[in-house]
Every structure is written in structure tokens, then in C-alpha cells.
Image 1 (cartoon, helix red, strand yellow):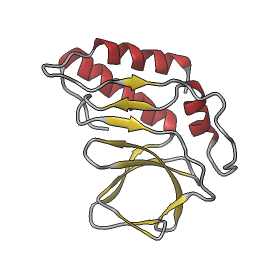
Image 2: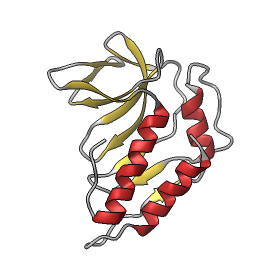
Image 3: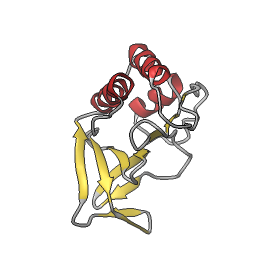
Image 4: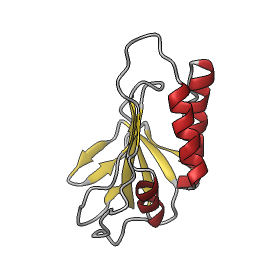
Length: 154
């Protein structure tokens, strides 16, 4: 993740036009004092929120949201994998980063039972090999929306 990514996202967000009254689109502010009380939290997510902050784009496509980590004692689980939920879309899907290998997954229609996401027939779909790839896809989707009024699926 770098400053260029954040600048591209802010630029595309400011260029987007809507044929209806919109909610506020927000990128940031950065959270440079983000608490490191969760030693298991991946450095790339900490860096994202220290440099960019939370993202709320409720009117870009169905909406995209990246939210900063909240202090918890342990990561969530998806079946047998430890994960961090860091975002969602307006369709109810959750975006997660696996702790073991850094993959980014989209969780669709999963149950959350006793701190564990449990797969069903829709399950988890890989949307990136790492957070940087996912973030690049997000900015490309927002740029497409700003340029053409439609968004590509992440």
C-alpha cells in the first residue's frame, strides 16, 4: 500500500457523479495512533489504517466499506483459518484477510457462530493473493464508477 493508491482513490471518489442525492463518501482520516494492542493484527492492515484510515463509499456501486480494527483479544475464524474482517460491500459480503498467508477472501452468506464464520454452499471466494492486490482492484472499481457510472465486481 502506498500514497499513490490513496491519492487515486480520493481522486476517483471526488470525480464520481450521481443522478440522485448521495450519502457522504469518505476516505480517511488516517489513524496514525492506531493501537497495537492486538499483536496478531497483520502489519499491512495496520499500515492501511495508519496511512489512509477508514473508507466509506456507500454510493459507489452497492457500496464499499473498509473499517479499522477494533480491539479484540483474538482474530476471528473461518472454519479452521484465522482471519481479520476488515471490510464489506453494500450487498452484505464481508472482506477478510487470512493470517496464515495473507489472502483476501469475500465471505458470502456465512453464519457467525460463537466467534467462528461457518461455511455454507456460497462460502468464501478468493479475491486477492494479498491486501495490496485487493486494494488495487478496489481503486480500479471506483475509477470505473467515476469514469463510466458502473463498477466492476471485486
